Image (cartoon, rainbow, N blue to C red):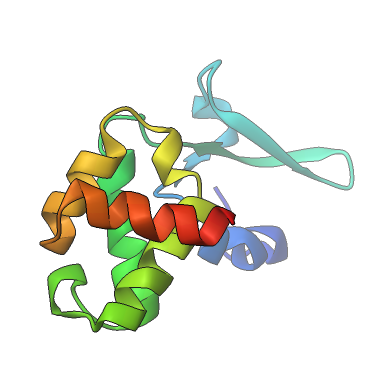
Length: 119
């Protein structure tokens, strides 16, 4: 796998943000995503399993807001809920409960923030 290929360099931040990894094209599995450049297969991307997806989303929001969820101000907690919602976190089973626990607030608080966003 050519780690210096311009396509790999260009998409590396996206693949890392998704929690994926590059796989040599000749080692790809059926579930891997083939990445081609000018008709030539360059690399494949292996996405992480859904298990742990919410944790990865929370970690990404904490990085973006530069703080752990429980330590954020009320306004930043609302921003965190908006970011998690935009990234699809609340489509996952038990996400409201898990985010509330991670944030140190009640489920009702998370629902209130979500309701305010969707008004």
